[in-house]
Amino acid sequence: MSAQPLVGVIMGSQSDWETMIHACETLEALGIPFEKDVVSAHRTPDKLFDYADAAVGRGLKVIIAGAGGAAHLPGMVAAKTRLPVLGVPVQSKALSGMDSLLSIVQMPAGVPVGTLAIGRSGAINAALLAAATLATHDEALAERLDAWRERQTQAVLDKPEPGEA
Ligand SMILES: Nc1c(C(=O)O)ncn1[C@@H]1O[C@H](COP(=O)(O)O)[C@@H](O)[C@H]1O
Image 1 (cartoon, helix red, strand yellow):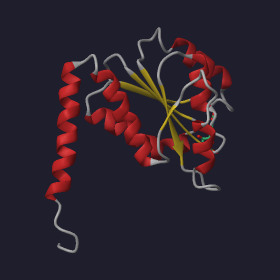
Image 2 (image 1 turned 90 degrees about the horizontal axis):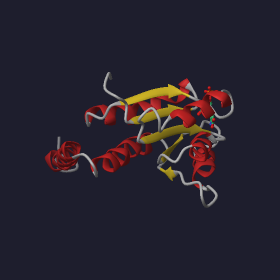
Image 3 (image 1 turned 135 degrees about the vertical axis):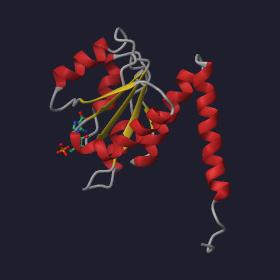
Image 4 (image 1 turned 120 degrees about the horizontal axis):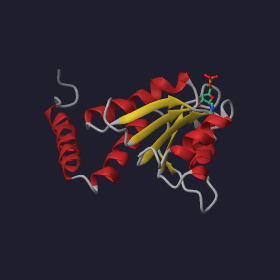
């Protein structure tokens, strides 16, 4: 997207993309400019510090951070910026994402990370929470978000009854 990104979507590894794509697709559907990048607290710590330090100045309003396993990325970003950080636990192979969830959720008081559900649902909901946050100051986005919610409701209502084709 060419407009000034308002949401930064970062992930610990390229391998998280199959989860984090759902956050990006949701932001895209809502017309929210975003950027995406791989940033790792473990593998690229200097890049993480630079990213978090520069985030406010670059005009980002919310950061969505997805990571799996020893998922320190969201917490470390939150430690370095006052922007709201939404953490998405990526489903890990060894422990099905419980490790990711617990690594992200149990932050010490004073350094908040808004922790979402494991996997695709969490990625989508992170984007929706980012949208809801931005929509408090953006009437046009608020209308797009309302329309998105209405379409979701209608899609459920339009489904055939269970057991029907
Ligand atoms: N949890 C983190 C962090 C971090 O928290 O900084 N950096 C990479 N990772 C995670 O390692 C997992 C395996 O990564 P690879 O597939 O690259 O081996 C990924 O889910 C990633 O988020």
